[in-house]
Length: 483
Image (cartoon, rainbow, N blue to C red; front, side, top):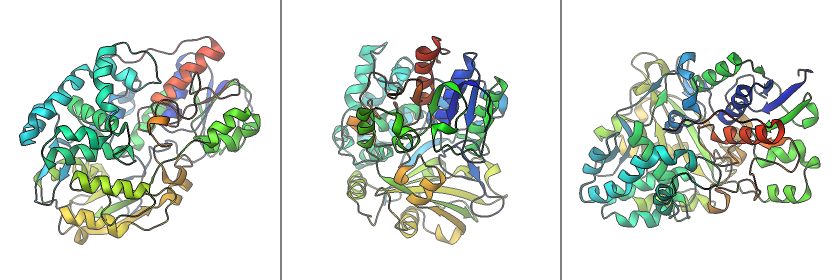
């Protein structure tokens, strides 16, 4: 490790670590970014997991929040080769009768397909889509007084509801199932308060620009962020796994893109007793079991809308999805898990050899589960795409332990950096004046275990860096994109 002195050291090169490093470097400081793996990117990595020529996103895959991130939009990432491809259908939700609900960029067209719930869908989403540019920075931020309180209240009131309550405004199973699939991204029972927030944000993003995927793989986002950081003068070291802060070179500020479990391991002895107590009480959510496939042909979904979608939610009705998510949260493994599937190669020819395809999917499982879920996931795909199994020519899986070994931030397979329930939505990882400060001066947390939580948006890193700039250096961060 370098023995030079830096103004700031950032540990971890996931999207939040990169955002923090760039924000500090933009302020004119000297910044060292340390990554334990040989490859940079954290959850933004792409590799040939199955067969040669088949490029799979190891963790994150579809990136509506990356493209819409108020911080990433301020950066010239296209100059470093980042190109987003936007499928014509952001997400599709098939049903057993061969039909599917589809989310298009056009809110009107999406609503029209929901039949009797068209009006209810428009009344719910149209005001939020229109007001999003003014409230995005507040929604994706730590708790504070919003710049547009009325618009924020219009979003916040339905967002606080459990998804099972919000869907009562819909009469048909099509709209209910569609919203349940969106809310299931919260990775918790749909009866929990605030699960509607995740569903609303994803739908707003779809109607404001779609759900894009980066050409060549998620690694392209990381590569562009790293290139920009280096162009600003930042320093990078890989293959340096930090187990103790004593390993670090001298620096006035240290920012950690890790969760409370790793923070306690690295610096527990130097933290106050009350803060250590708070960190030990931090709760992690359900894990995921993930599978990547190499396919001889594209997935033969029965519903045409699914064949045109970058993301497909496989779970059937709201009742089925809610039951499966509740069971997983209770430590069970339902026969029909809710499956999130992405088919990037349908829109990005760089992902597989000519004429062949890749697919990416996961289901939620109890935290720390080692149960093999391949059969259950493939049954769900086959249910809505008969003949799918015949097209499989290779597969690769991650259970929760393998995911955590790959990325220690995925504690027990939790890809959200901690449970995003009401008690940890804005106070993660602890109830403090600033969630990014630790009890040790100059030491900050910048991971998804801080607000606004999981997702590839970099906002946790940006706000943590802004806090460090003010506290330690009496400097301000560059302004965010204002829509």
